Length: 331
Image (cartoon, rainbow, N blue to C red; front, side, top):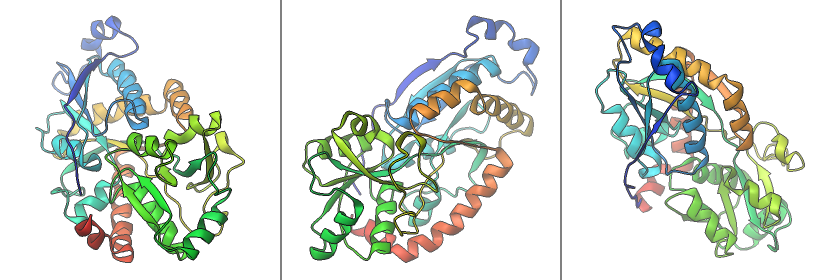
């Protein structure tokens, strides 16, 4: 799989209380004064995407709770795994934290990520899910998912779809759908959802499989949304059916979360969990999440760890079912 490492972008994110947060930090401080200096947050995706936007909002609110700025650093590459590895490799002192893509459970088993998500990470909070979907250009001959399946059955491997990287949620979700439908697509891998979107808008690829990057283009009439991948329809596109409604037993929500290197001091971990609980459950974050079709799916650290453990077991079976190791080797 081809990967690129973007130049790390670092920005300080101040809490909503601004300077006032700094003045009241001593009153909030515990855990031997933690935090006494800015915290670095590693986002494993490029700036401007849905994950980046949601995490910046959460960090802004959490910074106010912690009484220290949070330096936001984008380290994109390897389908989100480059930044995750960098975060996991940092000193477990609470001064380096970051987003954990749930696909860490898959890539670690595929061997492309030298990390054990059950041993090498501390889990602080599950934050929000994503709304995935299949979209086509407005003048596409595909008016419905039924049309897509019919064409793919008539001409196996001819219908193309763009996705954000081999082994990622959009690629695996489409392969699950293809298997459920009994068809074969031609998967076109990109280095991120933005590049995939542009080629579908330019009609170089038949379909886009992505989280809600397609949303404004569906609303403007440039793209047609054929199906979403959640358990239920998304409120913003309530007229679009889910894959399950259409008879395909596929649900992909891929919740994001926040973590730190394993081995955090318990009082530091508690401090971070409390701050991010407030941030994720805030009205400000809820509004941002709604705007990017990201349902809030909060879980505190211990429950989030249990969730990751269950997904890890599910991924073991999925890797075998879809022959993902073979796909990765060819990719």
